[in-house]
Length: 136
Image 1 (spheres, helix red, strand yellow):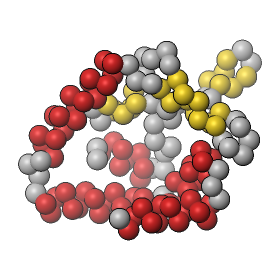
Image 2 (spheres, rainbow, N blue to C red; image 1 turned 90 degrees about the vertical axis):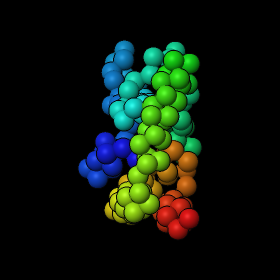
Image 3 (spheres, rainbow, N blue to C red; image 1 turned 60 degrees about the vertical axis):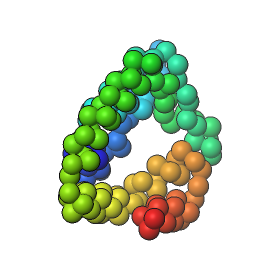
């Protein structure tokens, strides 16, 4: 997990979303950014998938269908990251995962709110999903 993602979670940022923009006097939904080579980047695609709040049918974000170039860049980045990650010690990997687990626990309420917004689950059910995910 990249330090920029961990830093964003630690700071409580909604990772990967760009802010809504004004378009013809109304607010257009935020777009979800791609995470490639340790950075959040806007997709250059012209194909987007709307994610709706099931309770209101409001579009809460638009997710890009990544372009072939974006997918190839992401795959190459993963190959490079694997070379480094595969050489790290088990203790180092364990510490990274414990840090991630702690960040998820610290931000459980915000994560649950996002699950509720995007999937329509109750807060209690969403918090249970996050908690169960931490046990696996």
